[in-house]
Each structure stands twice: as C-alpha cells, then as structure tokens.
Amino acid sequence: GQWKSVFLDQGYFTDEMLSLDYLRWLYTAFTRASEQLYLVNLAKPFIPEDS
Image 1 (spheres, rainbow, N blue to C red):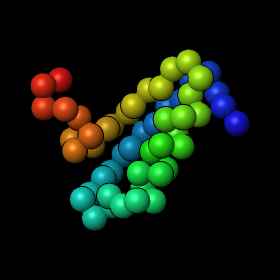
Image 2: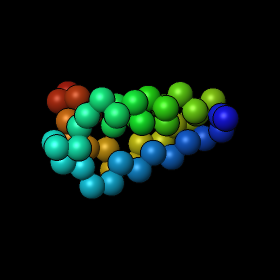
Image 3: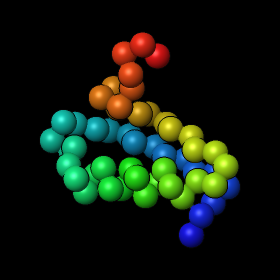
C-alpha cells in the first residue's frame, strides 16, 4: 500500500549493514510515500557533501 506521508528513521547504521537487501528496503520505503517522505537520522553515507 501507499501512504500520504512516510517517516523513515534510519536509526543506528554501520557500513556492515549496507547490502542489497538494505537498499531494497530503502527503495520500498521511498516508493510508498505518495506526497511526503521524511528522512530521520539519515546516515552520513546517504547525505551529499554539499548539503
């Protein structure tokens, strides 16, 4: 299903946690938001340097 707003709290994250399954989980969360996606506690590897 889809929701108007999705809150994605990445929480604790280590390099060892980065896997294809984890990226699939992120993709699923991203594509479930029909209007707004809130990224909470996003890990540094996912934040561009210039932001």
